[in-house]
Length: 114
Length: 108
Image 1 (cartoon, one colour):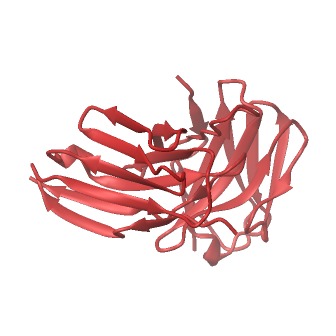
Image 2 (cartoon, rainbow over the protein chains, first blue to last red; image 1 turned 30 degrees about the horizontal axis):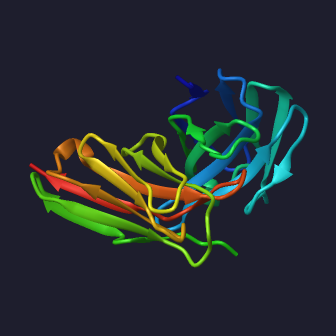
């Protein structure tokens, strides 16, 4: 079974703080993704990575950065947290290539910025 | 731009009822996935459909991919409270496009 873990289930931070969200997968997947999920807006892609040290912007990268130093780990960084970044953050991984493009998600981090 | 539209947006039913939710697009997809997300958790992959006209069954859940590979449906027979959750469809190449989901509530 694919396992994707996220460093925290719940996080409360203050405006202006630097926030790190960590994601680790144990299935040797090449692709990793960060989404945020908000009511009425669905899942929105923030950043993704197809390989170590490689990153690509998704649909809403503003205010975020990412780091992928090892294949199994993909970190999302909020340089200066703002209240509009309060959301559910989901990490996912998938195999590169093939026909199915199935993604496997972590349990999510509920981030509140006050 | 590829879009996936899901309907209905919300569904509240009694235990034992049958239901169908839909995922539609004007674009052709090589495959579509269905996920279920329970409150406070990440989405869990239920099934992938690949061939036009394909039907897949997962216990009381039946998934169908349209002949033209532009739409899919999920039918649940004799719904149970444990089926409660957000059902998402997704498709695409590499980066998946997600529908906004159908939020299902099954009352005992």
